[in-house]
Structure formats: C-alpha cells, structure tokens
Image (cartoon, rainbow, N blue to C red; front, top):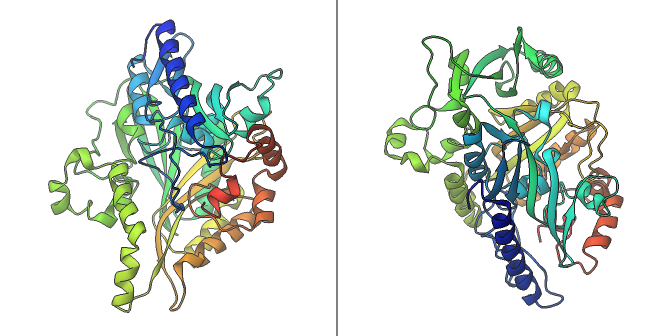
Amino acid sequence: MTALQPEAAWQSRYRDLQETLLAQYRSIPVGSPVRLAKRTSNLFRPRDAVSTPGLDVAAFDGVLHVDPETRTAEVLGMTTYEHLVDATLPFGLMPLCVPQLRTITLGGAVTGLGIESASFRNGTPHESVMEMDILTGDGEIVTVTGAADDPHRDLFYGFPNSYGSLGYALRLRIELEPVRPFVLLRHVRFSTAKAMADALAEIAGARSYEGRRVDFLDGTVFSADEQYLSIGTMVDELPAGMGPSDYTGMGIYYRSIQSRTLDALTVHDYLWRWDTDWFWCSRAFGAQNPAIRRLWPKSRLRSDVYWKLVAVERRHDLSNRVARRRSRPVREAVVQDIEVPVDRLAEFLDFFHSEVGIEPIWVCPLRQRDRGARWPLYEFDPDVLYVNVGFWSTVPLPEGTDPSEGVVNRRIEEVVTKLDGRKSLYSTAFYDRETFWSIYGGDDYARLKDAYDPRRRLRGLYEKVVERQ
C-alpha cells in the first residue's frame, strides 16, 4: 500500500482486511481465548504458552493514506513506526510522538503507551489519535473517537494502557506535525540530579533554552555526578562547517553525549538514534567492541535483532545457568520504565543509585497534552510535569535468592508508588490486585471489560501483566 492511495481504493482494501479478520475470529471456538498470532514483540515479560490459534494480523501493517493538507494519516494498527515514518517524512511530516525503537507498532504504542523526547510538548502516542477502529473482545469492530456524543467514547479514553485486554486497534487516524531536515543538539552536563531536574522543569515549561526553541528534550544519567540533558531543535540548515553525524555504523550515539557539547543529525537519524544500539544494551552482545562492530553487518545493528538474542537468553536462562555452575551470583533482570513528578526525580535517582546501581539511565520529560482529558487506565495529573526513567539491565542477587521472586523489581514498585509515580506495564510487574487496580483504573476498567468483552474472550489486564497468562 502506498501513502497516497485514492480514498476509495484504501477503504476497499481495508474492508477486505476487516472481513478476513472477522472470519478468523469467528473460527475460534466459543469459549476459547482470543489472542494475536505475533512472531515478534517489544514486551519484556514472560507469557504462558497458549495452544489455541491466534489472529493473524500481519496484513495490518501499512500506511493507508497521508493527507499533507490536514496533517493526518490513516494507519493500520500493526504498522511499525519505521514504516510510518518512512511514509510521512517525504511529506515533511512526522507523528507527534515517535517511540525510540523502529519495530514498535502504532497500535502497540497506543494500547501500551509510548514516549519520546517530544513528549514534554506532545504527550504520548494515544494523545494524537483522532479516531480508531477497534476489534473488541466481543468480536465487533467499533469506531471510537473522543467526541462528547460518541457512544463508544469511554473505550476511546480507556483503550490506552489496556494492552490488548479490551480489543485490538485495526485502523487509527492520527495527527502529524511538520519537520525540518536536521536536528541541532546540545548536550548539557549537570553534576547533581536536582540541578538536572530543575533544568528539565524550566526548559519544558519555557520550551526554549538560551533563546532557542526546543523541540526535543531527554537526558542520560551516567552516574550520580554525571548527567546530561540533550536539547534538540529542528533546523533547515546546519551551522557553517557542521555536517550531520552518523551513528548507524561505527559511531555510538550515547557515547557522543559525553564527548560532544554540540552535534547534529538528520531528522530521520535523530528519530532512530537510540535504535542502532538499543540505547546502550547492544554492549551485552559485544556489538560496541570495535573489532566485532566492524564485522557486524550495519543492517543488523537494530533493536529487533538484539531483542531476538535476548529472547533466546530469557527462554533458556543461559546466563544464570552458567553463573550457578561457576558459583557466581545469579542476576535479576530489571527492565523497566517508570514515571515520577519532576520534583521527585532527584529522590528517585538517589534511591536508584544507592539500591539498584544500573547505569546508564534514560530520562525523558512528559506532560499530558490536553489538560481536560482523562485517560483512566494511566492517569496523570495534567498540571504536573513527569519524568520517565528507563533502566534496562540485570543486577546481582544475594546467595540463595531466586530471580523469579523479583526482589529488586518489587522494591522499585514500592518506591515509585510512594513518590506518586507509576510504571509502564510492558515488563514484569509484581503488584497485588488491590494495589494494581488502585493505580491502573480498576473501576473504570471493570466497566469497560463488562461492556466490550463480557464473555472474557481476551485475557484480563492483571492476568496479562502480573500473572503473565
């Protein structure tokens, strides 16, 4: 499918896809659970094996239409952001929030949340959705909007953070924004977490820094006394003598933050600056070793390649099996993104450095775009600037501790809750039911589940993200 098919053509194609999918749904025996048949995932929690066939949604990857006049796009739910960006950039447009990894899907980012360095001004991906078609657990396709007179308005606002437990997004109409060819970057160092947090609040509030407009804002924490904010501005031309950097080969983006105060990237390369080395996680596979990197195909320096390697490791618990044989400490995977109010960021980082010790750490500010909206399953105070903190590694455990107990992850959950924060549910979670539903919209979720999946064909949210069924 091309980005500018005539409306009748893309609508006809889309109707055919819907009919095929509904036929698949009806072929699943009544009483059997419904799930997606996906070969890949960006989730980091284990799932129990399911013997029943899944819905084949591979054909729902593609941009149906881009309208440069209205700055909107009609997009199928399984479209990766890589494909979405490839379709919109030729029109000088991009989605309002592009999560960092190429193979995250638009539908996945909306039902499971996403974030990036434009989130301090544009919020998260679901906030730029204008309309969705959702296949509900009850086998109906409903079109939902946020309009006050929409009978399915509750599903529109309740869909984000439901992780496929209420239904699947088949088509989404989203807003786009204009881009410029380059992003000029400044990396500003701070010696304390408080100084960095104060600067985050000031820059996000003013949307400017030292007199220059700020389009993108995130940060990297290398240690308790070395942290940087990366401040990005889209520009039409670069300063004389400055060419765009290339971090898709031998260069490693996150290392440049420590060595360069001024840098520039094409807007395309900026959007995927973290994907090449999966932030910094590629080092676990030797991909940052110069000798290995020279031999590693450039086309395989991608997050989805590393994810497949991790999936093999997790399936067989290879590292801990080797550790036990060599009488070394076993390690617990701590792969999480959390959000805390900006004025609690320093407190969280102090705890994290003291009790967890993973470095580097990613930080990214976000604020709800529409202060009048309420997203009940992941509710923010619309007047507060939050900061996402991302950390993805393993930590050694005391002798005799079982990694599956989640000792470190449970402690992080406890501290985040005390700091009026919450965490994303793409990875392991250990909340008891009462605590979980007090954070993630329990009463609202129950009403939505009764309305759109009364026969419980889809796994419930708690069952999926905590019990991992």
